[in-house]
Length: 259
Image (cartoon, rainbow, N blue to C red; front, side, top):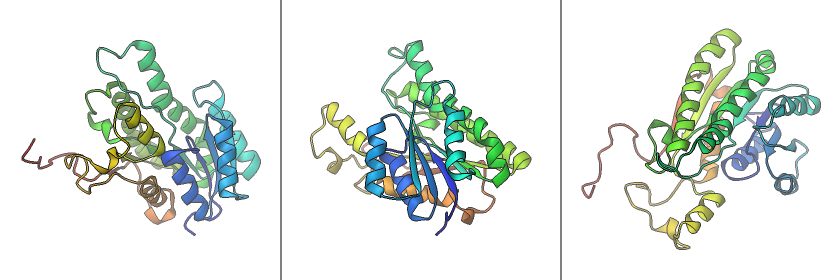
């Protein structure tokens, strides 16, 4: 077991990529505090996994005091903290014309500011255990799709934060900080989102090769495998790095002839 007895806080842990990371960490022996918005979803997760190494805490990570509260819950139940996975995020379409200030501020609050606040609150305890932070970003951090402007801005800021803290916190506190930038992942929510945009039930089976050379999207479980490496001691002193989990190179790609 690569994470035996490690205590890990995972935000956005009730569904999608976060849930897959929770499941994999439990399998690898970790003790988990999973955070999410909907209490009933957390209860479903506890019932499904049926593990005495999983507790949940439902609370909006942008609410004042939530970062401190999450750390307190982890310490009260497990006595220490070894890792934080900042996975909770919102993704909504917008461009320069549709991105108003409240929308942009909310996107930044959830996707960038709250993760920073959680790292800040957790740092004294991660320093004691020589722990680590894993931020879940997006390949949109590099530029983003035309209609994902605000989301891309927030993930770009998160990526810069991961690289900056991955250097400073490792040197000064012994705490590693890394980020995973997933490509297109077939989560339950993504399936629903595409249906709501008018796609057919089998949309995920007929993908343009330019986006999915493998003829399929990533599975949440595949992202969890990548997360396991960066959370475990097996990755050694890796810090300040961004792991692109994508089917094609983000820079220098040979575009298909039809494009």
